[in-house]
Image (cartoon, rainbow, N blue to C red; front, side, top):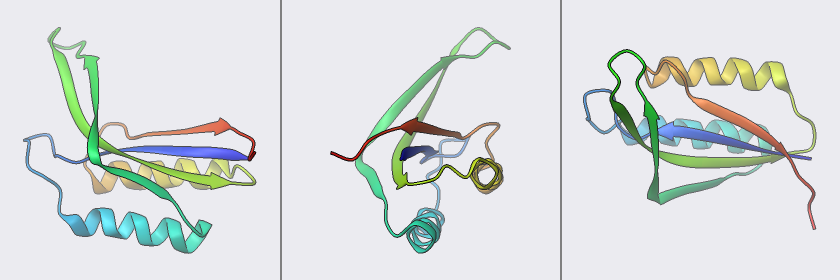
Length: 103
């Protein structure tokens, strides 16, 4: 079993919030395909990283969406990550898989 985590930005690069329908679409698609998800939306996560072009610290506020899957479909998740990058106009959207065990 795997836990898939998606880190989705809540603001665009100019600091404007994304429309709610973008998040609703993600939720609907993942529930339809995988039967459920957990979304941490009340307290956005804070992502910080060093911008190598200008040496400043960049910031993203994001939500965390988790999906548990029996089988890891790497090709599907890779294509979905690319789609999320297009939708949210991001250089990179983090999608990670963690092996896990249901207790």
